[in-house]
Length: 414
Image (cartoon, rainbow, N blue to C red; front, top):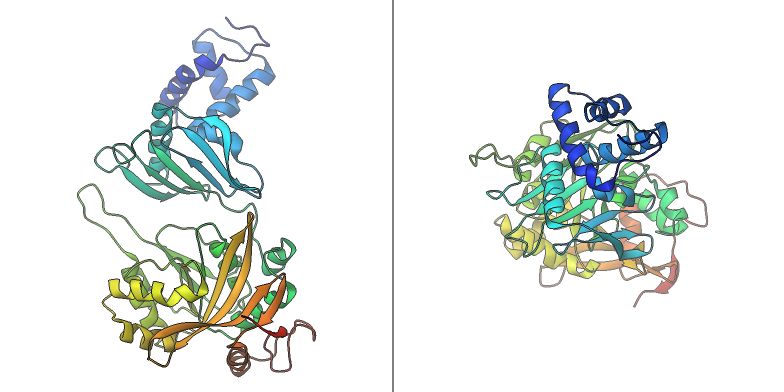
């Protein structure tokens, strides 16, 4: 029998976990102190109050939480990554870096399968990958061997501890005062836009912050493959795609959901991430009177966005000329983000338009240089579009000009 002050040995944790899971089957509920005490008594063991509380927390982390990864969840951590060799990496304010933690193959597989089940997904040898949204708000992805050469690979995107608005992003250094006024003007004018950038640049965070500035009288319909976009707005509804079941039936893709969103009386249609043929449906929706629509797209630079859209449009059956025609009347602005030295920040605002050859191009309107917003070749066109589609934005005379468009440095961007 363990003494009243001794914690449970580490080697006993796996056995206790099995006993607790069996107890949960017999008596469903939460993992709490009374349950742990009951399980320990069946083993003839008694622990002190502090040790019992510590053990309860550890077992709860393995049953309901992230198990061995739970202690890495901390303020500022956005991603937890487990590689096939068992190494664990975190992405936080210091960027992506390796931790001292290491997870064995069996432990990584068990964690991946359990989290997939929690997210309502199947993960086994027949379906060796899964993408899910956990009840805690974590976005989860996992790949099992033999697709991964070693052990299971897990990727966890943690939700922000709180909703970040444009003012919060300004305080964090993601954008300046002038840039915040520009983004607010885009939302106020109901200009359709795309937030672009590489992986981990904060696209969803900025998009949510911008949508949070939409009038409370608007209804926002968000379409996503996996729920990730959390918008601080009183009238937001979410649609999530559905993967096929074990028989390969029942799948509902983003294309179908975008079509359904048109029947839901949306004021703004938001496609969380454009990455396939559903772009065609979004463009058609935005070309039928649904102003203010938006979404995110992966792109290295704002100038790469046309090529990226052309590739996505091809998946939806659109050639370059058809895509340029559709985008020219459906999407207007690109808000591009980058990441330098671990800091996610706005880099550029560009306009989408048809070039001399009739193909799509992105032209810089505003660019951030050394913390200042400078005008590019399309600055006047952006100012004209914002002033034509909205009343003046009240952001202070030093930020917004008479037309209601953002005022920037008069030096042209290279």
